[in-house]
Image (cartoon, rainbow, N blue to C red; front, side, top):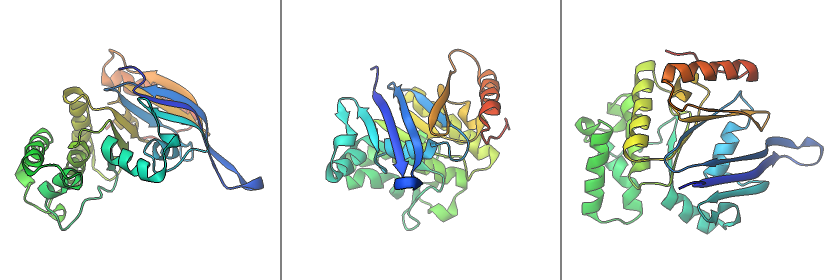
Length: 255
């Protein structure tokens, strides 16, 4: 489905009077169902602010954000909470797992909060444990597993309700090189097998090279866009590095 998500002339200001900061300035783009889209830019470029507005964590100053036929900028807070719960999944740099729950229980929590049936929850959890390769640590607690396993648990929890959009904010930021690569390959697998639509903010060119499309921000505005197409990841990585050299983006090279 085309224009699965549509961002129209979105602006975000902070402060007032003479102290106004324009964090996002008339940004427009669309995301198609099943796309893996990355956003890059230097610190202060507006990329995290943009993700926060897409995730309904922050509101827009002007413009509109459509998920299908729903304009989320017009929703009241109680409806936004329901929308967030029913349509969005989140993966953060710091995992946000509950230490008092096992890996399996952390994954199940998202469906439990939606009052799904026990059998349905168990079946979906089994699928996620297998897909993300963490079935062998299902009974362990977060403090007993590696950072990469924690992040895969967070991915499973985010995906178990089959969200319309998975939002990932610097998901590899706390991981070593090997765990980062494993997680990014997992994202690619989820995108391919589950047709998961993923929107990822990253400063890392290596991470971005796994995406199907990259949006570049500079001073709150869309600066450039790259589409991977049929080229291999190495070729796409080189293109990303070329653009970042022009934007002054903070990036990491291939590992």
